[in-house]
Image 1 (cartoon, helix red, strand yellow):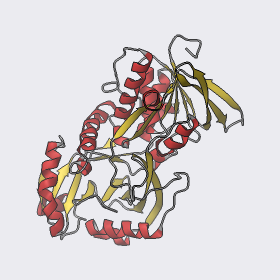
Image 2 (cartoon, helix red, strand yellow):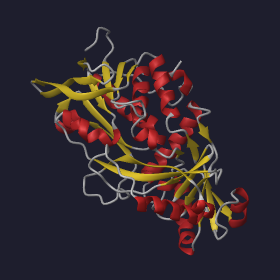
Image 3 (cartoon, one colour):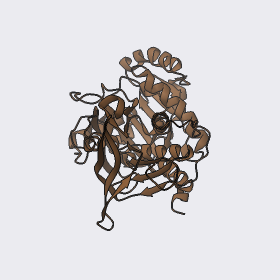
Length: 395
């Protein structure tokens, strides 16, 4: 063991939602945890997503695995993190005859994925959401919700720290400590740069977890391995005014600007999709912003004249070989890579892909891999374990 205690020591690299959930799961299984993040917690993709608690309906037709993951985690998160969500449900609205033609397959796909779905007439939809385009033809109601992008992960951080995890923001992983054993290479720790005091030092570990999302490929290279992560940015636009109380989705094949979410007194329109090699330098293309207004106003006409509050971009950490054109062709599911099995490098694990909704499931899969590697028999407890309030992180 790399620390004085008898518990295995795991270093988690990445202070977003996935890293928070991994730290929470592992500490409940009796491990000693240190989490490092180069900036403030949730300052990467986690703090920039639109805040959708997915029902899975968006993926039901073409990505059923992701749809099933989302609806299962939707139910678990409601149970372990009450009060974190606005349980406002979602409407998938058909505006054109082409949209309406998609409805039967969409509805049946939702049911086949375990996503509760209810057909809604045009008149009922307009009573529920008066700002909808009066030309809409029909709608389907699903159990979507909204969340604060940063508060849910802070509940995982707070709970992990209360149970003994060490959380180190502004501490960047800059190198891996690698030794050559008879069986091959082994990662035994992380060299970090403390940006608060300028100090560089090493943290020993029995296992290092790469939970850095779209930066996962960069961190993996520190260990001499490659992971098939394709960063896929998208634009989001927040406008002043709450133009809907439910999550409004366009009922058609996934495309740009096909969702509007209420967030407090704002409405968030998203999103576009392209691919990049560098998630640290994301553009906010003016034509993408204009497309958000154009497509958003097709569902809610008043959005066309709404006042912009903010525009930004965030990179999705999609799993897939390079060569994707937009990222929409890649699945939203997740995968845990054991680099001992895949690359001959022991002591190093990567978790990537997924959604903010599936962060707990991603952590469970990662913790299961780590327990097998360390020969630990300890079941996952996070499906029922209630999380502390986000404010407890600062208490």
